[in-house]
Image 1 (cartoon, one colour):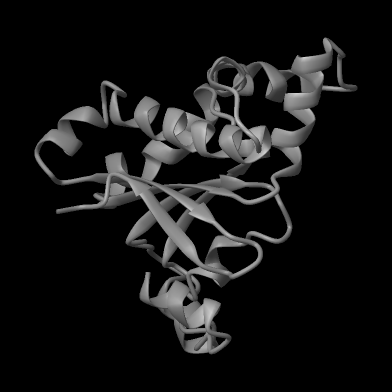
Image 2 (cartoon, helix red, strand yellow; image 1 turned 45 degrees about the horizontal axis):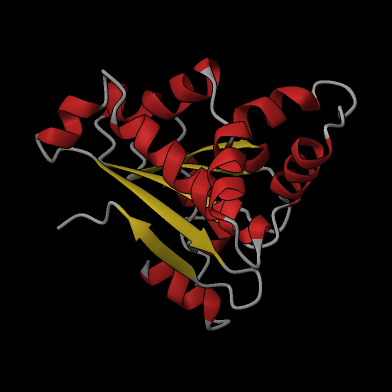
Length: 189
């Protein structure tokens, strides 16, 4: 979060991005966090948290859609390297969420494999549709963050690590306007 403060203030340090760091992590990595975030080009976790090579395991999917391969990718750090933090990072004005919301609302099928993303985001849509509200896209972004984080917290392989406080799973929201990350849930005590 200190790195995000630097990013949001326009004063990033860009640490761990030089030849020495590349050589230091060439044989082994020990990232301090795993981040599940969106594919959006405006939300690169290494930049918005002002970190560098070897600092994060990053998995990116449309709207933080989760499935078996994605879950396995997120599990990799905690289960193989003892990574103590997972951040599920959604963001303001998410295009994947907006497209899924419209497709589900209008009963339309998106092209290619995009319906897989729509299906994965349907629980967040249903939650938002039932609640109503003035900004359903932003509400769906936040709902998806919480659903994905809760899914990971209840994962049979991750839940024991969470219970022992060896792993924190944090839901967070990134503002495109300010560059700031807001922790929604799961902050370590």
